[in-house]
Structure formats: structure tokens, C-alpha cells
Image (cartoon, rainbow over all chains, first blue to last red; front, side, top):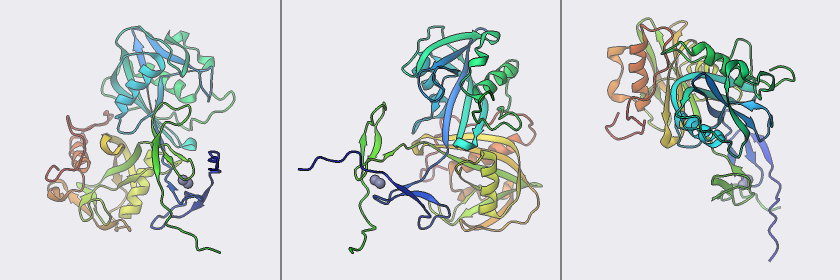
Length: 186
Length: 186
Ligand SMILES: [Zn+2]
Ligand SMILES: [Zn+2]
């Protein structure tokens, strides 16, 4: 019995499937149509008193840099539940959602981010497998020069602007900002 | 040269890929991992004076029933641009986004819906390939008994509630409602 080749080449070609109006990636091996869709990232700016929960990333991209607890929404999960799960997984934190803080879109990587304002139930936090460390920072002590993503910076500033607000519309990308990573562009 | 079998069976099996914590669909033919993600639907309640734009569906599911112009967000598209595109494609309408009206989640089908409040630039509308007909309805003339989806009903009511509001937080699913289609359950 031949050893199974588990490294079989996976090749997709751009084709317009029958009944569709757009080019999609079609697998040359088996015809599977990979309908790629934008991805939803859910996360939170979670506070405990005057301090904000942040995580230092243990994974690429931007390993070693600080960000907010956030990740991909899973199937059959509500965005609020996803944001709660990510805070638990990445920072061992139990958060309660307070409001939708912001919707950011990063068109280049087809990402829609739903960032919630939340509060911590207590200050027991611990890094999960995707975090090198976690911390609670007052606004002026946030590692501003060491943030992982532009949208983390946006969310922290929008959170500060939102502190006095109730029933506000979600913030969006700052004017003209695409969220693309650029060296020195944070 | 053998005729190519274009009907080759596509079989996926539930496996936990290396470095992942969850079961995913892995193609038994070629090893492709299908990371299924929740899908983003973008749409609008678009008004012209006191009338609201609606489309009668030419496609399944719920062919023949009325709904709002809405569809899947495409790659590298902002949600606002997607809502504008769907109104153009399905109703030949030129809309301008006014506010984020609502975020609904239908966990059973892993859908997050971003529904915008919008206004029409003019009253020239025409059914696109996915619509049997399109119409502009005053609130009391909406085909309430013939709506395609629970979320269309929610959005129409939330739109009515939002008319006097500026700078409001987006509405969400009515309490306890999952958006599942049930016979007579609209
Ligand atoms: Zn394949
Ligand atoms: Zn395959």
C-alpha cells in the first residue's frame, strides 16, 4: 500500500462558477469553490476602574506588540459572545459587554472589526496561549509606542472619547485611515 | 485522453488541523482546510419621502417574498459600500448611507447583518436579476404578511423607531429572537 502523500499540492484557479457573477478560487484537484468572505474580528476595550486590559501578542503577526483582546468570530457565535470568549482565552479575563464601541473596516485584508466597550468583573487576569503577558494600564501608561495594530490605537482613543457617553453610535475608522500596517505608521 | 470527471465527489471530514484548537472541515481529496467563518450581510432601509424601498425575491430562499436590499459583503469592500452596491444590484437604486440602523445576528446560520438607514437620491428603481419586482411602500402598505425574513421585519420596525433619532446606537435582535425561519413565525 503506497504511503499517502499528505503534502499533495493544493492549487486554486480563478474562475467564474456557474450562476455566479464573480471570479472565485476553484480547486484544480476537486472543483471545490472557495467562497472567500470578509472576516469578522470581535474584541473589546475592557476596563477595571481607570485601567484598560491589554495583551502582548505571542503570535504573528506583530508578535511581541501590545493589543486589545480580539480574534475571529466563530461559527454560530454572537459577536458579543465572541468578544467575551476572546478576553477569556487571551487574558483569562471575565468581561461584561457594555456597548458597541466601534466598527472598523480594514478593506485590504477584508476584515470587519466589532469592538465592544466592556468592564472586568475582577482584576484577576492571566496570559492565554496567544499572549506573552497581559496587563491593566491607565491611559497614560499604555505602551503607545509598542502597539500591534492601528485599530488598537483607534479603539483606545475612541474608548476615551466614549467614557462620558451613553447610547452613542459606534465609532468608525478615523477619516482617511485604512488600517494598513505601515512602518512607523502607527 | 480520458474525459475529465467534472462531477468528482467533494468530501470533507471534521478534523482538528495542526496548531488549531477546533474541528474544521478538511477536504479528503486534497487536504484543503475550509476555515468557515461567519458571513457578513449588508443591507439598507432606504427611504424616499415617506416610502421605503423593498424587493420581491427572485431567488431562493424565500423566492416570491419581500425583503430589503441586502446581500453578502464582498472581499475588500467596506460595509457601507456593500450596502450601496446591493441597493444598486437588486433595485437599481442609488442610495446614500445615513446611519448604522442595526446589527442583527442569526447564530444558527452564522450570519451577522449590518443594516444601514439610507435615503434614495431619486425614485427611479428597477428590479435587478435577483428581484422579481421592487417597490416603494409607505409603512402601512408594506407587505407585512409576505416578508421573506424575520430580520426584515425587525429592521422595518427599528427604522420607524429611529426616524426621530440622530446619533443612536444600532438596534439589535429583539429580545429572545434568533432570526430562525419558522412557518408562521414571522
Ligand atoms: Zn480541492
Ligand atoms: Zn479538495
